[in-house]
Image 1: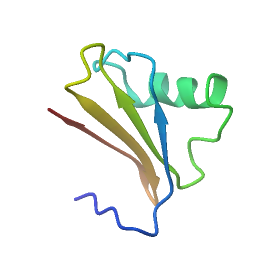
Image 2 (image 1 turned 90 degrees about the vertical axis):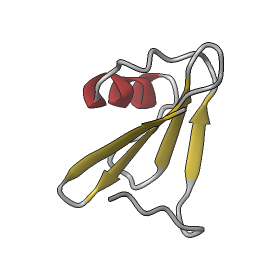
Image 3 (image 1 turned 135 degrees about the horizontal axis):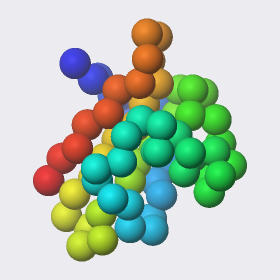
Image 4 (image 1 turned 180 degrees about the vertical axis):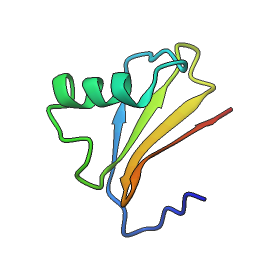
Length: 70
């Protein structure tokens, strides 16, 4: 279960993202386009082309959590 609170820091990537992307692909976007580190605890948000889906990438102890919502 992924629990996000007001103590979390969020970053959104606004260009359209393919919702089929894996942890590795999303981490690559964070590294190259957002110039961040995917394992820094920030919650990264990605949206699809029509902006009705969102994908969340978040590093927790033990690995990545990812959720797609529509």
